[in-house]
Amino acid sequence: MSCTRSVYSWDIVVQRVGSKLFFDKRDNSDFDLLTVSETANEPPQDEGNSFNSPRNLAMEATYINHNFSQQCLRMGKERYNFPNPNPFVEDDMDKNEIASVAYRYRRWKLGDDIDLIVRCEHDGVMTGANGEVSFINIKTLNEWDSRHCNGVDWRQKLDSQRGAVIATELKNNSYKLARWTCCALLAGSEYLKLGYVSRYHVKDSSRHVILGTQQFKPNEFASQINLSVENAWGILRCVIDICMKLEEGKYLILKDPNKQVIRVYSLPDGTFSSDEDDEDEEEEEEEEEEEET
Image 1 (cartoon, rainbow, N blue to C red):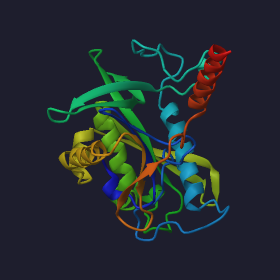
Image 2: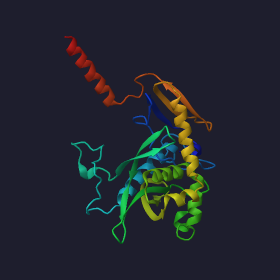
Image 3: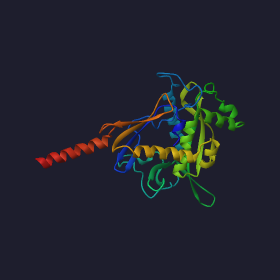
Image 4: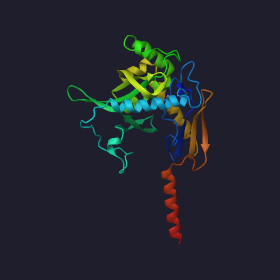
């Protein structure tokens, strides 16, 4: 829905089964890594093991985002529980070590012929004065070196010129902010909370300090960052229409790394199969062998 703002390459696996389409990421892909300064005029160019290389910056940002979303929660209190348990928690996992996140499946009708079901996420809830519950998404913007990408020194400007900080982040991280906003809108979250986290020292990517937070309503924030929700839905509908014209099978939607172009490639059967799929196939083969004997 926000793919027109992306610069780096990414991919999504699409599988058509009958009249159904399944969109999912590849196992062990970098799709969930949070890019840093992707849309800046001069994005990070360091290579190799440099802690300011694009991949290491993405790993750092993802790590910060995960930890901050948990630090914002009130621990030791009664949790807000949905009717169904977390589908990704297995019996042998320690429940106390699982990140607190709620998954919500929501449904939309895109015209008369398409039903869309999306798995969305809430990072927390807030309780109002009268006991009303508001769902929130918690995300983190991180400062890695204000001397790069026309940055603003957060320690000096965040309290006095927060508008300048968010404007610079919108310029340098337009795709990431649009993606977060779309996720909050899809989930039906009442608020999107942004944290501002900076390195303790510019040359140390392992220690960080929280400088502040800011809260928005997703619809209002979408207007601030010039994100057209109608256009976002139109992009998704266009992708669905293209995929529905394909024959049954598995495909890869790939963002071209050098152009603002999305390509669709056909994949052979069995490509990107997960370990669970392989185990199911092995069990089916064993059952067939037993029946033959």
